[in-house]
Image (cartoon, rainbow, N blue to C red; front, side, top):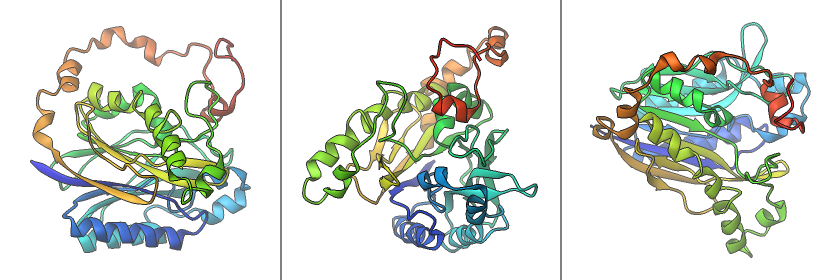
Length: 324
């Protein structure tokens, strides 16, 4: 079975959901013209992302919506029904109890909606982390899973999603160009490089495809696909996001961790590829998973004394040798 899929990188407008939905609609229409049946957009691309860290509770709440009852989810469902396509996009969810979440909405052609709340939400103290994995059936005769940005960086999350049966992992991000506290991971890109993209495109390309962007992704992202026997649709922001520069690098990987297709230029773009689902049978990751020895893995569920909340772990300056 072949599934034509697409993933998108685009520069969102902070706080302007109407403008961002218009961008999504434009890409969905282009994808439909190419026969795409599944398309993914970046994390929090409808609300905007990095500016949210500076907002107070009321300002974030004003951006938030109910899921599935909000207007943005309704717009995604309308597009999904019109083009008979599965569409994933990120926003801020307001739950029935008032909690705020970084949520990824997956709208189905039949009007159904699935949603994943980011498990490791750190962007604001006013937002909560989700507490469950998201794997679900699709009309494509395969199972989809969702992990948002940092969720993908913990190998346990990818393995759990695979064990729950995910064939294709939707991996929406807002990353690259980040002021990481790890001295050899990513790094901030000077916003002037983005502003000079028309006069010095080579410098921008070197930054987004170098160790602050694509090279960093290739250290770990293919392993998530290979080791767990899943296809991955990696979507990401591109361009200036408040005071950081997102690197794009949207790509589609097969279940062997090979890049099937990717965006090569630092601009709003869509990449399309045919997923050969027959590769799942006997792919390396799925064969190795059958040899697991769960009786050895109890340590994975035991606290080691140095655990931090997602926000503390993201922004802490403390040494990893220190125990909480």
